[in-house]
Image (cartoon, rainbow, N blue to C red):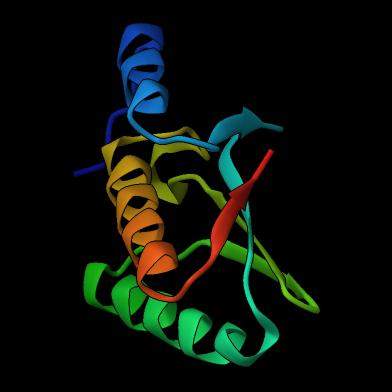
Length: 103
């Protein structure tokens, strides 16, 4: 069964609980700055979480900056609860790896 897109109210509530995350180009997105020695461990932890959830972000890494963009393909590219759950997990992993969200 396909995931259901979040309503505007659900998305607004989710964003209130996800500091630094925003809707950009239809994706749930955030950028984190990480000390360079921590980048690989942070990315590896995120990749493991994605695999466990069978839900993957588009990730861009440039030096010590990691950008994440989430949407749900089986919901037509909309933002769903799956994306919010993964954003929460990425936020927790960022804290564990010394990464800070960028405005």
